[in-house]
Amino acid sequence: MTHGIDTSFLVAIEVSSHAEHARIRAQFQKFIKAGDNFALAPQILAEFIHVVTDARRFSAPLELEQAIQRAEIWWNATEVIHVFPTAESTLLFLHWLNEHRLGRKRLLDTMLASTFLACEVTSMLTLNRDDFEIFGIFSFPK
Image (cartoon, rainbow, N blue to C red; front, side, top):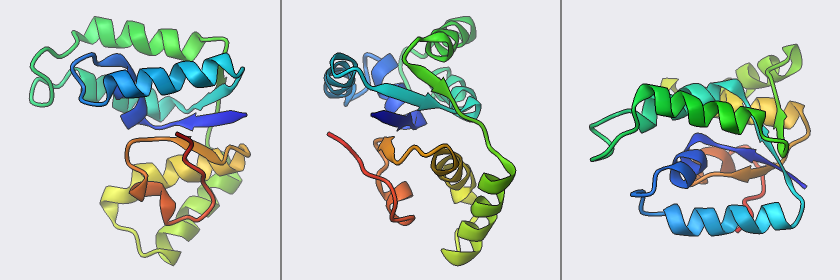
């Protein structure tokens, strides 16, 4: 099975002081042992780097170079499938914004959701399930 990775999940795996770190790492290892794959979009890496280097969020944020290095490791992992927005996913993104009356704070999540769906990824790894349940197509494995 292929699971789409959201930024919140990636941050929890990589930041040892994160409250969900141990649980998320154990969950991730379970998926690895099952032979699962992971879909990753470039915008997740950008948001990951932004979050993990923010001293307002963490007492010991990563240095920019460390964050970039970790992002590169994820992007190059053999279990990771690269996904990108398409013309169809962009139309779906715009449709969902209108249909669900989503505001500007929901842009990135909606773009990610439409990208995953266009790539036939319907399993989502996230700590923010509420951001994606509205679309009614994703499962959230534990």
